[in-house]
Image (cartoon, rainbow, N blue to C red; front, side, top):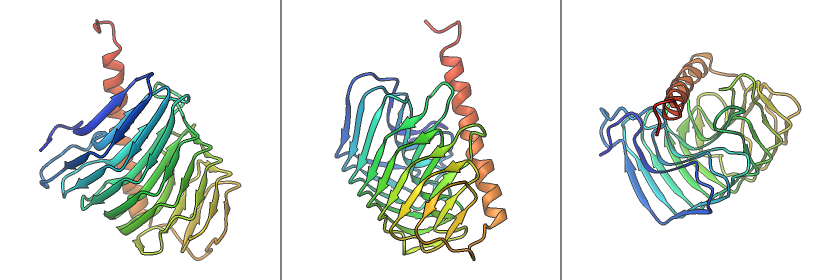
Length: 252
């Protein structure tokens, strides 16, 4: 029953020790009036500096405005392993799992492994798995995405100067997702990513991406795409403001 704009079931922030989060049950956004959009999530791990294992958790998101099931977000020396989690969302905007990075205060995300997660989403223009910003050399493999969304997998432009690059998307089960954009969508700030396995339909606006089954007939739903980009910008601006405040001169 969390209702704050930063409603998070489990949060770990700026930790140097090894972290393991497993076998938890988290439910958020039970009511449509729950407005926890800004960085709200079942599990959110930010600015860590060692091994982080997130496994075998069950996250349920109701019709409220929760941002994502699981968010991982920097720093470059963290080594994330997100596996065997179950995420079931009926909310209008949540991604199942988000992998974020930036070259600013939170740092990039490097060499994360996202595998064997089961994700069900029901939204208009978001995704089962979203990858955005300075994210590189990560492996997203063997995940199952069902339901309906903008895309099953999105590599997205949030931070204009950061690239989603050299990641591997391998053998993810995405054939049963009804999509409004494409099953796999790579935005302009993506480069040299590799996709093998199911593709169904692909929209690739990036450079050097190696996709095994490109579909030249896929095309972006411009209304859904524009709405998604605007919604993504809001929580990141809010999160940056909170981080700046927490490190200001009045901080003890």
